[in-house]
Image 1 (cartoon, one colour):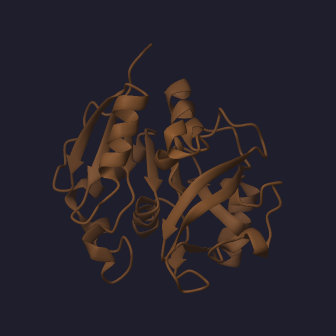
Image 2 (cartoon, rainbow, N blue to C red):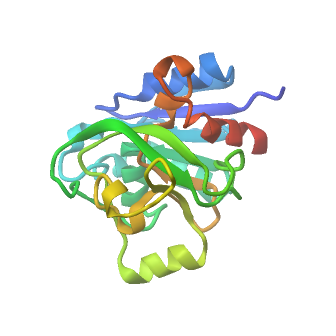
Length: 231
């Protein structure tokens, strides 16, 4: 099987990089290297992953400082070439700050940090990141965030819906997406969203924490299997 070259970007304060590295290396047996935030040469990498954590301590806003790290210029060029970029949790926030994904992040509707299992459903299976899911398939994937309330204004929500850019919605175990199954107040219960070209995905739940049975769930495994099936 062809191996894919993954780069896991690490900022000061990132704390999910080793989890992501482990899954790509030990579970999926792919080529993977850590990319320090000061690097600018990303040649040879097929997929870039912005992992979760608290880049720069989440000062100012989550992702607001990381967005200006030298590596981000190279990452934006990587995405503009049509190559894949996956932003998980804080990585999603960084993508929004960098303008690679529409929208912004607010504090969770209940203000408190949330760390728990969460059901999500795949709305769009036609992408690099979701092609191994069935449409409306429900998966259990952990969340861990304090600023996960993804906000889109009405124009951006219309654009997102018109272009079928929603990858995942928060839902209950039966796939119902409503206020009761939305943990943080995100617009339209969005848990994951693409850029227009669908080569960039921001996802708030942590698929790397749900890729091994030993962790209690494999609901996120298909995100990585989808990448390997398509790249």
